[in-house]
Image (cartoon, rainbow, N blue to C red; front, side, top):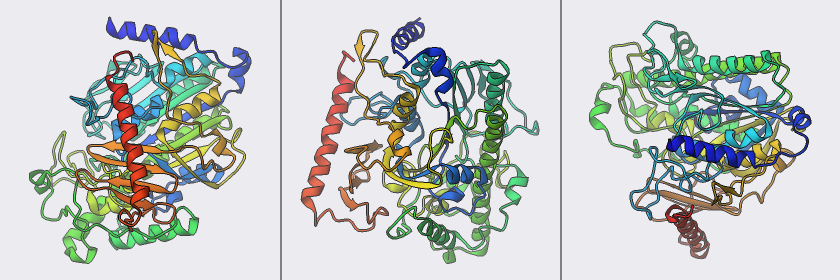
Length: 537
């Protein structure tokens, strides 16, 4: 009953949001929207962002659209998903913890009533909303405005999930050898939704959210995909990382220096007994490649080959989705946004079905993890990884493609943006105003900003500041300056216009600038604390 009441309140609120113009006419002119989210993809893991991995479909979208060079996420999966679909920082909507709020919050907490997901808001503009992939948000897809959904709750099993649902109904467990692979299954469902939309002759625009589980651990991929990269990584992570950096510089994606590999920085969580299950060839630190023996090098090269195969396969499946858009003549008027939920992961652990060290690497019986060595490559040229809020943990590629609406082709955008900007962007294009109240509860102003102006040219003033906090790691960016601190460590300060790799800490030489940034971080934290503790919201 509580869920029904909440949905009813949201429905009434959404119906009170007025779409711009005549509904029938505007439905023909509003863009379709396709948001594609990768899981644990590093900043440099796509070909168009410097990688050696084959991603021709995403590369083509970048070549015919825009590439953002300074776009950010929240450093973790579930907080990013909350921000992506609400337009608020996850701490504002109870989806990540605040140290100032007793009991905190996190992946099991529930958003406030005033924070509906984007599909509910789009319904007032006639959008049909479809979802395929990893959910990791509170509530259900149906209650959140999606009319069709494939919900994969089993991200740790690429070949044989135990928990997945279609339109809210549980599906049977998949047996090994049934030919299932989650990246393909997610794309299959997205394509079925698009085909049904076209076959039904629906005039309304659609919002399609495709959330792949790749390349999140465990490293699992079809053997024929792995074979494509069997010999790619024998030179080791140091040379591969330098080669990526050189391509990024040549493309103009970054400036400054390549960050030093932090040779003593291991995984963010200590699971030494689990790491031992991987065998003697596993390495839990990003040591110099020549410090590894031949067997360790071969083992590590195989792991990266699997990671590459997972990204390669994701790109192929995206290509099938794009082909469906073309077949239904929706490609030109579809805004496509591609991004990642956090930086590449240095986590090393064993979950789900465990790890058999004697099984073929990348198979369903294995649970290999990328680890800090290759995660450092994936996050080129930046420091740290998923969960940290140094640039390696929070920087994401963002590709924007929309032939009918983005007239520039193949340009870079250096606009500093954040996943909180996705909702305002889509609402802007859909002609939908955010509700001012839901169920009599005032709706706080979203910190997100529309990216639409940046489709034509860079928008340097999009944000006065961008704020981060996750598991004690904290940061704030204001213009050229970024203050950042790992958990229980002092603040560092960087001029990210010349040192985005965070190599020259100028905290001691610029105390006034650091003080201004940390004061703003404190002020934002206090603002979010008040919001979280205000019973009127």
